[in-house]
Image (cartoon, rainbow, N blue to C red):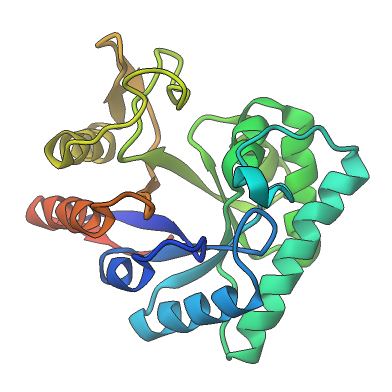
Length: 246
């Protein structure tokens, strides 16, 4: 049977976290810099434990005003510390609850910049390795973050997106462009099944693009987030694809 991981960003102040937990296998928990605080981290870890969901850190730039979506150009040491501090903060909260971190997925601009900038990707990978070399690093499929993590000896998860369209080079369509977000549950489910079963995605220009899908991101911040996640989950199950953590 084919398997796939379903992940979702959580602990970011959205109202759907509890409802989403039943449909995912991995949670990426905001670590207080772009969103969240110690209380939201604790509550989200507890939710993940209740549902048997893998617990991951979701570090971002220290820029809550812009939800971590604005690019910031930091010196290497500052970036290393930015990532390391957030991982250690969530790790301590998880440990106090008898839980263990499973993975790391950078957030927003940090994620997108590391996908293209090899130096940034290497710094992030080194920070993850410093905290816990057994952590799985989630990154955009085919990106520099995946390459850097592998070079550092980390286990990786190549991530694809249920609700984002793709360019011909396999990159995500920027959110600022029309058609960047897929709003139809049926269209998103069809894209997910294509990526998992065929290891391809159809670009905005209708070109087939080869893509490695090991984990699928579903976003938890939309008005219909739970319904969307339920639809993706059901489509995978109906096609005999098992949902489980990496």
